[in-house]
Amino acid sequence: MITPFRGDEIDHKVLIGFIEYARENHFDGLFPGGSTGGFASLSQREHTGLLEEVIEESTGLKLFAGICRNNVEETIEMGKKAIDLGYQNLVCINPFYHKYSEASVEKFFDAVISALDADMYIYNNPSLSGFRLSPELVERLKDKHPQVVGMKDSGNDMEAFGRFLKIKNLKVYQGKDAFIHESIEQGAYGGVCSTANFALNTLLLANNKTNIEETKAKTKRLVELVSHYEVPAIHNYLFRRFILNEMEPKNYVNRPFVDLNDIPELMSLRENSILPVDTR
Image (cartoon, rainbow, N blue to C red; front, side, top):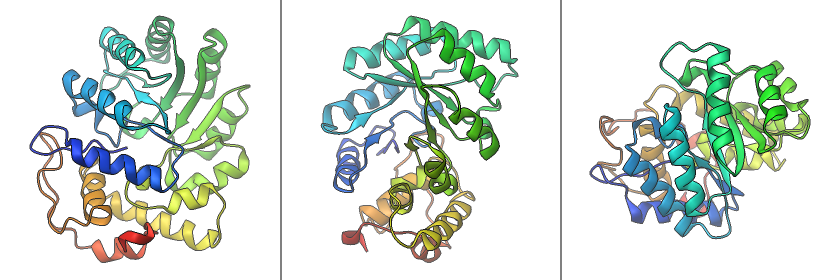
């Protein structure tokens, strides 16, 4: 989910509006503190505040708290804060920016998982983190740590995704919107898809609704269009523009991101989005 801001502070009113959007459209759950939530740009105060506000307002939705801080001690601290707030599901990506070996990444996960008493989900997103988790590494982590119950795979590699699916008792979620339908058909537990922040394409694909091929084509085109813009600025902009119907959204992302005020493809984005009926 997005992290909505207003003037470099989390926008509580819009956050509640987003949770209502998710609830009204029958989302199963929310993932605050992930990539689309701009977690790497959040201060510890903002990160903690986000998790606190989401859990206070999200009755009836399953919640997955993103806890990674790119440092072992701070990640463990964030995980403990999330547990204290009431989160039962924690999501952790591998450390990023530096060049890490697989042994170092495994050591990071071993330390974090061992310190936290909650269900853990491993997050693979090599295009952003700079490191690709192998099925062998994830399986080792699963074997060593019973609290590892699942993963989100945004690896953009369906061959590897199929190998993740073969890991015993591991709930595998697809993180790439364009692959959600075939992933569900292959046995994926579900999807965690960024375009769901402003459109319902992936929700319909995950639930095998009608017009599958048309919706898949729209989703692919939508992802292509969105990829030209900054993440998470584009998702925040489109939620405010498409769902809240703000004509000229302003100050909706934290520093150093800038507002996206000129979206030439806006009409094309609308044409490639299946929006909630009451927002058309």
